Length: 341
Ligand code: SF4
Image (cartoon, rainbow, N blue to C red):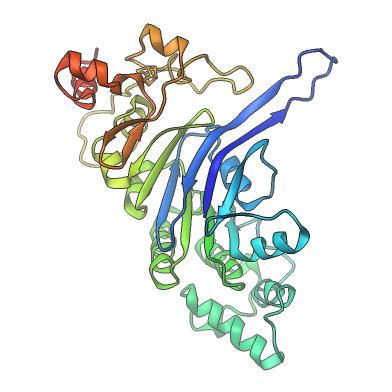
């Protein structure tokens, strides 16, 4: 699956009619690929546009511009194409307490997609398929769970049911929007490991939306860091967390809990996310960036190569500056962080 130049602007409803129509620049020119059998993490703080991006990928909301492709072909807009797309691309929501219907059993939740997509068969076949789904998400023995209601399950078990509901129609893409953020810390790892197993066993392309960069490193092959609706850095997840090139990624990592850190964290940035109605000019991170230069306020940086498959949208990584300083700017930035400049 591929997204090309996706942009989403939401109109602002104004109390007083005005000639200037305001919009929220929720997602701006985002391109990414979700290859088979890989996990791609989209990382960012609240309001960075990552959940809007997941909803654009499911076609729950229509992009202002940009396109979606499956197997290299544009996704159709007719009702038949839309139904097929719904089967192939499934969204797992953040809150397993509200994504399941409290008055229906686990059996109902898993039978429904099978029936809707014509995979039900006769009564025995349907029962067998529901039990199989429960086994696939490690809710076994199935007898223990099949007739339970959501309130009788733990948060982790509910999230597993929500994932099983998605698997019912044999999707190829799973979009998991903060799937563990509402779960107790002790059961998060189990759900992350389940996603990892599904990637390998079922060869799913998984998008893992999170604000937790440490879990992105644990689970993902590729990480895409978003800030104020834009992608600011992308590349292999371990590379990005070991050698973050964009000051915003460095800020996220400095704020992540680290059991090995004896001292309190020193945050590599200041302030809070900007308004997306009037985003800052040039680089949207410049009001918070400790390295901001004059050019940062004037022009938006393009995606610049930093290392193998790692790119960062930051003027610190232009070739001219690299040559002038005769050392890689990633190192220059790291040096500057180290000296607190
Ligand atoms: Fe900071 Fe400038 Fe890089 Fe933006 S472009 S992250 S303001 S140095």
